[in-house]
Length: 473
Image 1 (cartoon, rainbow, N blue to C red):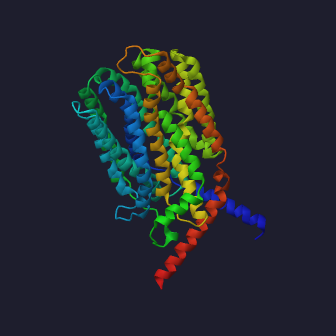
Image 2: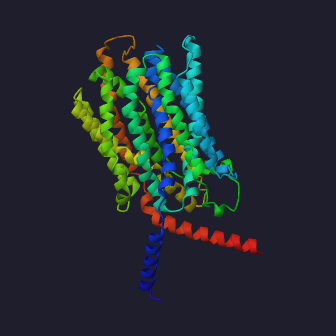
């Protein structure tokens, strides 16, 4: 056969294989996606912790900010160990699937955060908030981040399925968080006037979201063996250190996730709409306009056939920067704030919804260069960045507005505090996303993936054949 004929035959074979790839059934897609909505809303609730602690519990904003920052120092220890434990796990339920039970623990601790003893001393209140926040984030949410991609690559097999889970499946969490962002400010205005009201408000979301978040454990099993080349060899901690040393690309993704979560979880929008717009209830209108962004998730699979995930991410970052610049000039102008919100919201969709695809690319790269895949470790690094970002956002908000003179006991805030709130809602996040964009230009895996996938598939087939031959002897 001539070289040209071989190329034609290989192309035809690849096209046939692609057509045979099945998508994810709707029921499984829903079950898989609901957990993302459940954990996403829990993390959004953490963004209201500073407002609750300062305005309802009358705690010092600098103290709350410091507590959240301290928790992240502890978080750094648990994240890498979580990834290591997930990568080592081998049970009858699978490797990543057992850790879905952490959804229950996460929501329980989230509720308990808002049940801080009202009559306790400041020290007791601080310890309570720190411990509950640590359990919710450093343990339960940590394992949920570490197990996500591990579970996905063992429950599904094809790139088409991964894209569907990350795009079509991303609509469900986006819709759930959209509903939360519309409903919560209105319910907050009606209920969150006392601590009892806050507890009732959190429970309204916690109970059903715990149930929905656990569905995929009962519906989706792990059936895909991507560890055939390891030959049953156990993961050692030196394997984790090797991945952290030899894979630079996971740090580029992690920086993007860190900055996005820092800004998203800062919670400055509550202060902005309270002190600058003058009506916190208008946040619901702003959140409702986010529904315009949902159709993006349906066109992303088609876009990703033409450009890579990282290129789409870079486009989104530029969109986000433009949105924050609009916010700077908006002031209390609601139409301009809506435009800025749409630009910033659409711009972060690739980072928030497609991170798993980049983690899989990083795992494929690990396999390609001859080290362990360790999706759990990669997911833990990305999860660490996510939580550090969220903690920094909540912590820095309290520290910065406190340094600027914000006082929850004042009816009218000083000009310095108003200026800080305005900058945190516009130019500061814009500058941070510019830096992320420049760093993302260093990500080169998308150009290497065709070769990486071909080499990995060949070596897996050889390993499976050798294993079968050994078993037959």
